[in-house]
Amino acid sequence: MRLWYVSGILVYGFGLAGPVMAEVVGLSPEQQLGKALFFEPRLSTPAGASCSSCHTPSHAFADPRMRPVSEGAIADHFTSRNAPTAMYLAEVPPLHFDKKHETLIGGLFYDGRADTLERQVEGPLLGVAEMANRVKSRVVENVRGAGYAERFNTLYGARALEGDSDKAFAPY
Image (tube, rainbow, N blue to C red; front, side, top):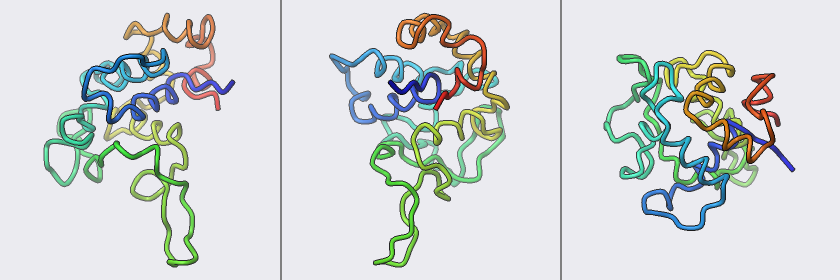
């Protein structure tokens, strides 16, 4: 069984792009936790910005502020571009060169630097201009403080968020 913990469980939130706009019945425990984390404002430093702050369900999971760049968790700190829609992240292929069309396609982020959703989630969570957590241990601490530790322990074993923060953040 592959364990994702913090970064990976957020993938479940992204994967629910369509369903989270309406009440969803029958979500798996992982999907419920991913959805909760996607909307959790305590994951940023300082608290107040969630994934849904810039990937807003009512705006096709994109930034509703209609600016060329998105503002991060810290007031007046902006990213280098606007938050794109998160609706189709699960469908994006890994970055590769398409010989037929002689072009690069796929990859996550504007420059394709992340090949998996788990790796993509790390960028915003640890990005100074986005969620402003400088280290993985801070994200894990924020998750513990948000009251999700018991849900993680139920899904991934006792003390899933304790010990090595790198492993608790993304043990893949």
